[in-house]
Length: 219
Ligand SMILES: O=C(O)CCC(=O)C(=O)O
Ligand SMILES: [Fe+2]
Image (cartoon, rainbow, N blue to C red; front, side, top):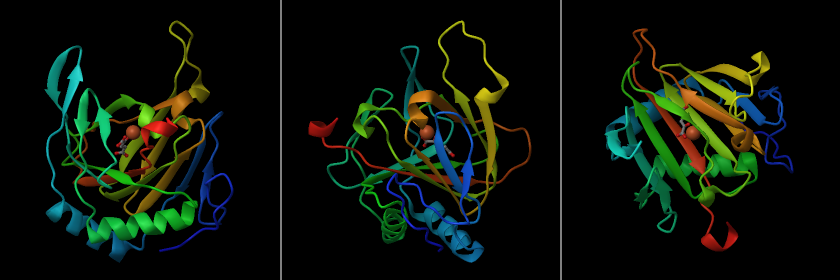
């Protein structure tokens, strides 16, 4: 695992990091953060052992099944309200705790929870959203580790209704096996992101987003 030097702003300064240029966002990507053998082993372990469940989402007042499997893991007090449901975290596994510790060192920041998502094939996806729940605070640092099939990840600038979209508003990335994407600063405030469905024959992908759920006094 390659470590970067933490910068005061929570993004590492290191040649293996690509700083992604998107106005008013802070993003950086290490496409080959984990060595392939470590990424393979982690994928197999998480796929087999995490308590994967279908989360339900509230869409236009109706409960619908999310098109993916998920697991919410974290410290016992890291409760998370998501799409109208309050999740109590499952306990850390040794593999996720050691990944968390590595990310904390790299970022010089604390993470107390991780949302794991399993996209079984190209029909599983995540719609447009920002990770802007109040419990994440106003400028969250989110560390996103991808394992398995590479998938497209899109970021699109939030614009007031009626204001025309600009070509520079959207960024499309492919998140490879073993990659680490950091989203920081005002990224969530100004951008939504999504993992679109694909008709291509793709295998399973696991994504882990490490987050810090703030105690209510700090929100
Ligand atoms: O699967 C991904 O890369 C994105 C997941 C995501 O946006 C989230 O968990 O909030
Ligand atoms: Fe997200």
